[in-house]
Picture 1 (cartoon, helix red, strand yellow):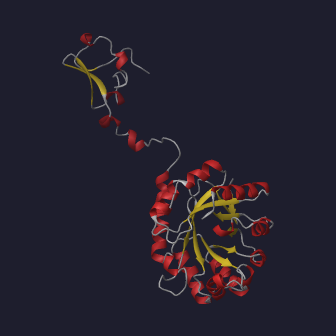
Picture 2 (picture 1 turned 135 degrees about the vertical axis):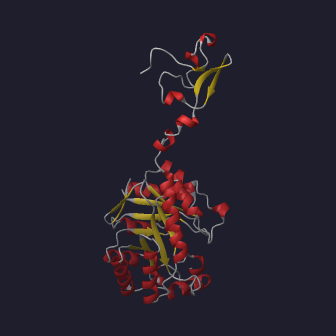
Picture 3 (picture 1 turned 180 degrees about the horizontal axis):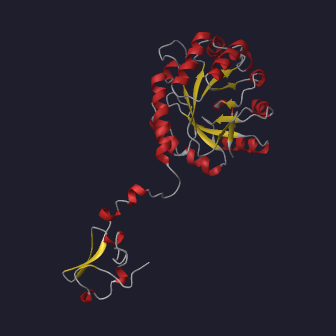
Length: 330
């Protein structure tokens, strides 16, 4: 199943599509947000993603255990004006703009902005009311799977299939940063084998290695947290890529895609041109049959190649040197 983002079509063989997850890294500052979008474009991103919510609609204001969480999200809550300004900046730069809705009103706001797709956060793959709301928009959906149990992923996939939703599934590990021994990239071929979706990777590990390997395993969409400056105040800046490291990510994932090539054993002309020196023909030498270089059969089709041993016959009847057969083979 192909995945559509506006007028773009992603297949399982598409070049890497890089999402700069700005999230809360705008710091609720219009200029910081705009500059972050501009740097994402310069660094090789194809899209920028934010988070859209009204804090009171997804965090319990009466529970003291999550007051710190409420305070963080409330500080970085964006109104419609911010969304429109960030969307305008992104579109003017040729970037796709979308967001992760965390409540029903966020879905309505993003629908009014006519975003091309929705993103479901890992924690909401089990949130049926929100999934129903997003599915009703008929927009394509990117879904992260971090921290979800296998049966929860299967349950969500069944829901999407029942509703005929267009989905891109992201392998994800909800650890920040993700230790190397927890990245578990084999989930990518697992999803490729068990679904017909375009598969991606929401990468929370340090550096570019995991994303580059993910491309080699079949991921198409790569999502990475992105910041203008890792030293800025805010909850996610320190775990995000800055423009220099994101640019390296773009280069490395592009190289990984190119190195992947085509499925199957593909032999290049540059390889076969070396057959004369690298392969062997059959020779008679001192009453023995030997396979020796050069491979004269590549230039003279009367000479036996080293696989044609059963055509030699009685070696004692052969002259020294390359072993030939007659008549000339076609």
